[in-house]
Length: 256
Image (cartoon, rainbow, N blue to C red; front, side, top):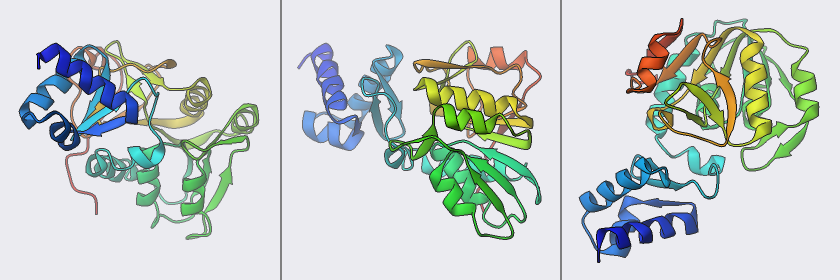
């Protein structure tokens, strides 16, 4: 089988299921893991799919569901979340977006006390409500079942009433030009408003989000206080971020 034919077949398999592991692709195509990794790198460089640790995600289906994303780079996301939780003191007022990394952040806040949490994530609200004298406000709106979050005019209208100590949002993608992007207009609008509504605005993104694209622009990093990831961004993104008054924190330790 020619390399181009094999790569087209890989893309078809990934698009059919939304995601594929290297092990599954190796078994189906009967080639080495190194060959699969090389093909995935080439396809990712052409923006035909998104390479992940151990496999690939389809771009044809948009962002995969929250249950899929929770197991992708899970260890890195927990480390990022642990580092981010250190920025939230007891008694703080916090905005939490949805997404798998921010849900990991909610887990790291379970021992914090007397938080006021405003979130559009049903999971985050459930985790942090009725604990340690917390107060939790769930933004209104229609529930998007893919991510188990509320979106729409009701959510944004309620969000407009708040200005908080810390806002924590995830990233669908961060382009080489330093633009934060997401997969739907509604999610992008919520993230944009959250970042504008806090004294400390924090973006959580594992390294697989760097130098990538998603369909909808959230905004640039000019007004973001802090970016937390598991690896330093590489060029050209690193060059763009270095020009900004932005702290880039690397979560290289292990979460407790």
